[in-house]
Length: 150
Image 1: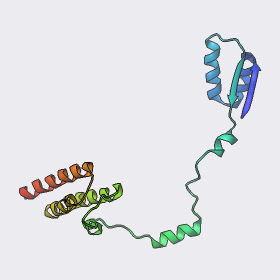
Image 2 (image 1 turned 180 degrees about the horizontal axis):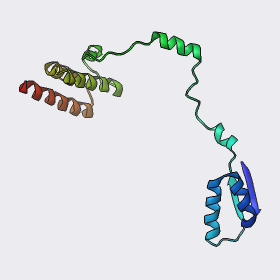
Image 3 (image 1 turned 60 degrees about the vertical axis):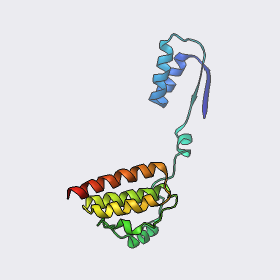
Image 4 (image 1 turned 90 degrees about the vertical axis):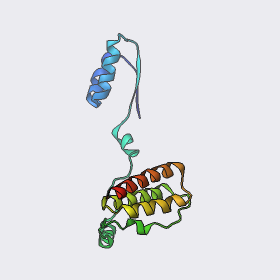
């Protein structure tokens, strides 16, 4: 950190304009307020700012990437995600709850409403949180309504 202290505003303006525009805007606002007193302003160098940045997104080595790429397989959404869920549910984590909801949504999309009702019932039979229970009931009702229409 570079500390500039006890400089008159007239001396400080060219220095700030040369270093960074946002500091000059701040100083111009101070000068417009009529402050002609001594100023203490802290400036941060770009080296200090870059030291606190998060690691780059390309931290993975090329060989690690190639291994991951070889093991990757596309995920086919064909209405079978419900087969990955283990019932009965016992206080599912948020990702597990989202998987159950996604499975019902997927069955709904594929117009397999009866299966959607069955999965919702199985999920509701377990111990789930109140928010998930409310959403499951809503999904179940939508599937049941579509099932009655068909």
